[in-house]
Length: 50
Image 1: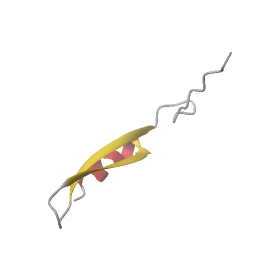
Image 2: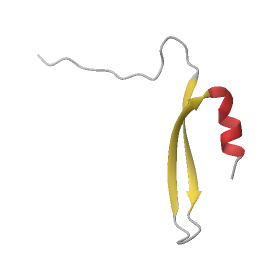
Image 3: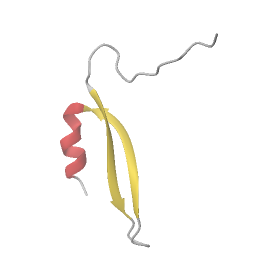
């Protein structure tokens, strides 16, 4: 039987979040998505930046 491997970002406490931000390209006008894993306290600052 195969074993199931479960990956986790948490090491005991839930202090990290995966943030997905939609960014518009200045050249083509197309939208792309940027994904980051960061500390919960930094999320508001990251989303407020342009």
